Length: 418
Image (cartoon, rainbow, N blue to C red):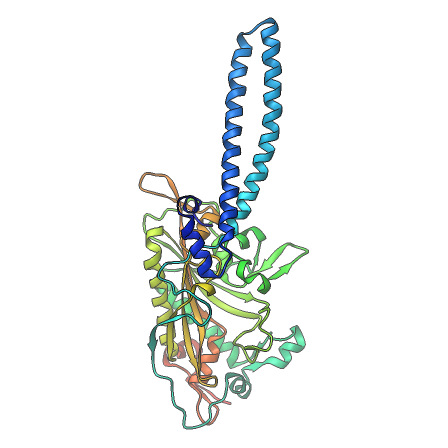
């Protein structure tokens, strides 16, 4: 959640952030109103407590009629306190709900707009010109015996693929290459739970924007994680962290689940947008002043991984209307997909500032020993959809696929053959 001092001191800044996201700026008025009522009731509760304490002190020294009058006054104050404290509890709840309804404040440097208003920061590599008609990744995967969508549908429904043979090997190779890079850079490897409590999901900023994409197990009241980020965010919930030696960096691998609600008829071919996939996610806890630089570091590590699969890509500064609830700014890396002749997202990295830290109650001691909210930064390091870019960019006329050299030690193959 955002710092509650910001809307009090500069409500227009929050309204402008809401407008940039395409959200209702009236939510800021609701927050201010709830905050004003809460603070007024809190002041009244404290005043009544002070009055009751003063009456209690006078009762101790009073006798006769004065004592009886003071006892009656004390009873009236106690009854009034009970009513006001109940009102305060309701006001605190209303304030908490209004506070949680406000997404993170967007970074002023982020481009304003919707899905088409991103800014390309850099383009790396030149898309390959084929001297034959390139196949898409599904046709290639079927010929290689790597993908089976039909049997996946038979077993689990649409967009639950079987990765078979070299397809399964390729996914594991990507995961292991990402893990090797992350651990070499000092990340602590984590295999988190894939089931997450609702309070952890909400504190991490999910379901939020992605409410329609989450799988909820009603009998257990647990969510299937759509990213390792949710469990990693909850790892240090309600803790005070020692950041004296620098940021705490974790790399989490897990199988992930998303309904992909609303995407029927769009990106449904192959494994670009599936409902079960593997992901390696970087997650960092740091001081707020370090978050911007840490965001750039995660982007650099992502670019290092993309360099290892040897595909053309571009770095995109995502527009404000496309940011998730927690992100103040997000960079995407989009790889060139030859069959579509278009760039498609492979990674994203988000600077969440102190938004998740506040919700999760994660703090660090500042220079004066006072606890302050921690900032979080997260970013994808590898995922199943990378298979799309590898197969299509490295395909040969005979239907084989040349394995990028950095990936070969993890896969044990130089060429994938039909």
